[in-house]
Length: 469
Image 1: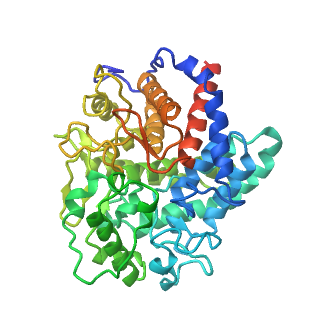
Image 2: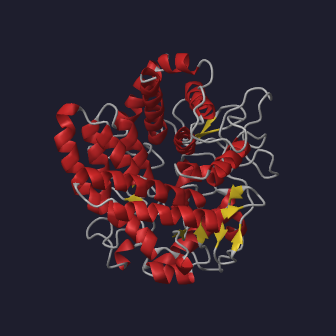
Image 3: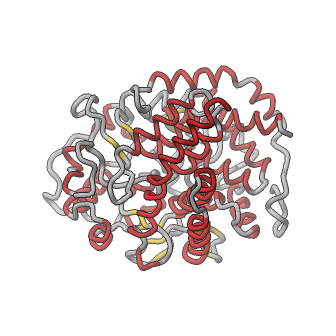
C-alpha cells in the first residue's frame, strides 16, 4: 500500500522505478498522438474516431481539448467553443452535437431519432441528442487556460470569461434540474449519460427494464459495422437504451417529466465526483475572470457532504451508485466507486479504503504475469469480460481521472503505475478505444481521439512534475 491506514493522504510517494525513463522515451507516442488528433480534426472540432463516431461528443471534446492545449491552444479553445454552441437554454450540454456534414445515416441513433427539437429549450438549427454526459468541461477549460503561452494569456483570459457563464449554467442545470428528492446530487436518466454506457454498475436497475412489444420501430445498429459484436453492448441492452430514449423523447426532454417517468434513475459516484471537481475549477475560473467564487465553493462543499452521506457504504468500504427507483445502493465493484478521489478534501480514511481496493487482486493482481491497470470492473467477478464495452477493459479516460485523483492525495506511486500501464497499452496496441487488461490487446475504434489526447496530457504533466522536483 502507498500508506498505512490512518496516515495523512497528502504525504507524497515516489513514482515507480523506471517511469522517468519511460516518459523520456515517449516522444514517438506524443508525435503519434498529435497525428491522430490532426487526422480527426474537422476544422471546428475533433471527431472521436473517423468511422464509428463522426459527430462531436461532449466529454470527448473536453478530454481532447486537454490534450491539444499542450501544443495547439487555439484549436483547444475552439473545440470547447464549438461544443457550447449546442448548449440548451436550460444549461444542459448535450452528449452529442450532430454534424450536418457527416454522411447521412453514418451514426445511429441520429437526430431523426432523438428529435431534440421537441423541447423548446433545444438550440435552434443545431441538431443534438436530448441527454447529457459527465460535466468535466470547466476543469478542461481551466487547464486549457493554464497551458496558454505568455503571449496568449490576454486572449485566453477573454475566452475563459466568455465561456464562464456557459460553464456555470451547465453545472447549475444539473444541481437544480436533476436532483431527485433534494438529496444534493445529480441523477442520470440514461446509461449513456454516465459515459460508461454498459457498465455492470447499472445492471440491477437496467435489467429490470422491459421493452414492450412494438415499442421500437425496426432499426439497424451502425456500431456493429465498425466493431465486433463481442466487444459491444448486447442486442437486449441496446434495445433498452433505445426504449429509454423514446420515453425521454415523449417527455420532450423536460427534466421533471423525464425523472418522474423514467424507469432508470441513478445517482452515480463518478458523475457527481466530476461535478464537484468542476465546481472547484469554476471557483478558480471565477477568481480569474472577476466573478464570485463563493457559490462554487459552497456547491462543492454540498456535493462532498452528499456524496459521503448518500453514496458511501461503510460496510462495503466503497462508494456505490444509488438506484433511486428502488432506493438501493448497488453492490457491483466498478471503476465508478473510485472517482470520488477527484475531491481533494475527501477524508483520509476514505482515501485509504479506495486505494486498498485499487491495489487489491480485483483491480491490480500483482505477480500474475502481464497485466494492465485499471480494469473497469472487478476481475474476480463471475461476469467480468476483458473485451466487452465497459465490462472489464481498461479505458484511458478512466485511467486519467484516477491518476488525477491519486495525485491530488499524494499517492504518487500508484498514480505512476497508472501512467506506466497506460503508456504500455498504447505502445503495444496503438491509440485504441479501450484495452484488454489481461493481454493488452486493443478493441473498439482505432486512432481514438481521447486516448491520444490523454496520453499527451499524462506524459507532459509527468515530465513537468519531474522537472519541477
